[in-house]
Amino acid sequence: MKSLVRKKPAKSEVVKPHHLPGPCLNCAAHLGSGDLYCPQCGQKRIEKEDMSFRHLIGESFFDYFHFDSKFFRTIIPLLVKPGKLTAEFMDGKRKTYVEPFKLFLVISVIYFLLLPLGGEPNQDQERTTSAAFPEQAQQTGLVQQKKYSIDQKKYSIDGVPVTVTGRDSMRREIDNIGLKAYVNKRWPQYGTVIKLFIRQGLKIILYAEKSFTTTLEHTASKMIFLLIPVFALLLKLVYRRTQRLYYEHLIFSLHLHAFIFLALTVTLLIGFVVEVNLLILVAIFLAYLFFALKRYYGERTGRSLGKLSLLSLLYLIVALPVFMVLLTLVAVFLV
Image 1: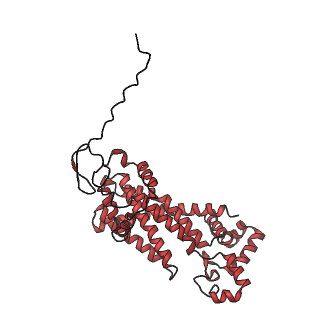
Image 2: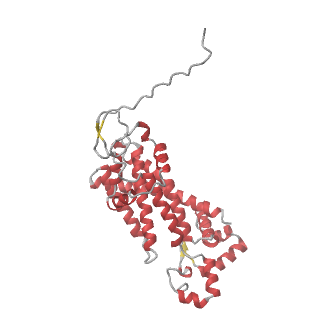
């Protein structure tokens, strides 16, 4: 007679991952073939699924708020030893430093929190303050100081100056004849695409609540987020003969863009005291990228310089259209 009680099916035995005995890549402690985690430092041995983009994002996101001394231990090599963090990470030393995606998120969040403090004053607010309290504005330097006075901030579109004093008359003319007609009248020599970008730029200058410079900074920052995987793809293309995985180039790209946001944050803080020239900032980025490429990919100086030039050109070819599209989208929603 068959039993009326159904037996539970036996659970299939979980196959433990098998590794060759050897040292932990992080702390050099001895690991047996059945050890998945290091008993000394706790680092997990690298499995096939660990080399995926999904794992990189997921692991970094869930650990995002676990902020400890590793962050400060990571900042120094990020600043003074370009490419070292990527090399250490890919060599297996992953517990010593902050994970690449987490590092990028923390630094970029700090930058975005500080960004509103470094922007120009709102033009409507400044005009109202100067009109209502001329003596106070004069005393605080709101009108006199070039750094904080938007009246002295000069922008130009193809040589046509756009200042605060000229914006009111420009806005009145645009309101009368329309933005498209105004651009066709002022810049008749350009084609449809260039005129489209000029119209979007004028929208931001004339109608945006934030200053033009702040809008550009926000747009450029969003563009950096979008271009991190694209830059990794460019690295994969330029260094295709090295047979490196896309994952490795992505780690390099995350560390590079983390440095870019860190440099922008430092520039923002310095900007409260003295204005930083944009060309100096670009030169720092290029120098950092050169030394990072040379350290991580291990090629000679000449080849590294050549690939730096190629990467810079390809990056500009991709970044400029993306930047203009983002800027256009910002302007589309203004009026």
